[in-house]
Length: 143
Image (spheres, rainbow, N blue to C red):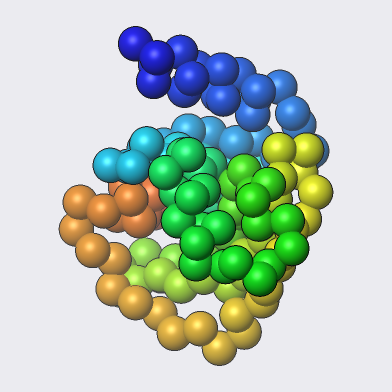
């Protein structure tokens, strides 16, 4: 019950903060992290689709991030990450173009671009597969 209440509160907080994005919930994972995509950020060019994805961290994942990045200032305040994904629908592959790590107020803790990051196959029944299914449907995802 506590997880349901916490998830509802997080969802309400995220939906009330605009920042020009229209975040739509699409999944959660085994560690209780929440996954959203920004409907307004979807851009299509032939078979390539780009979209911003928000990953709201659970307490367990926050602890892992702090452990894995002990020298990054502000890492203990990380609340979510936003990643710019590029998806090739016909080949069923995706890659990350950039990543921004933020605190609860949206202040940037760390950001990084990945100009040469390789594409990888979308793993069936994964979080990525769920988003690809939504985004790659003709006219899906709000566009």
